[in-house]
Image: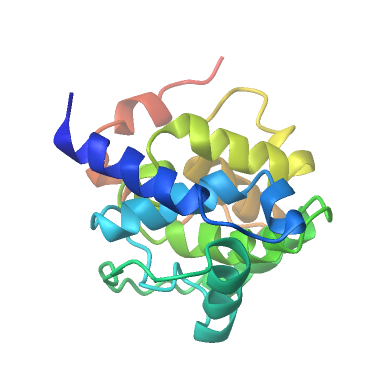
Length: 188
């Protein structure tokens, strides 16, 4: 088995075994957050050392969901993204309204859209399934609109652009993506 995968699994397990208040323990996003933190500690993805959150929000997340010693998190590559605030607003409009952690996730996902790979990779998640779980739980009405199982970053940008009336959409680095032909092939 891949040593990096083993390390990720151990980090996630350690984070999820920490005692937390009942509300945090019951939040279905806690495992996804643990995966992002494990990924960031292994230098995976593009998120900052605070997962794209303000220092105050990150402190609150850590204290509520993973109290105790913080992982050594290094910031990912700094990427400018003009539409960051617009993407945050869009995602916040579609949040389920069940858990406060959804606000954090809207900020994190918007920040992750600045990367050059698939969104799950840019968020430092283990696989696309974790991202699909996140999207379904946090942004259910937006997720329901992805009927063709389109790649999430492409879907978010397509939705954003259509709402804004932008016909040449700024999805980041599509030309450099290994799946360019899959995303830009005719959709049936």
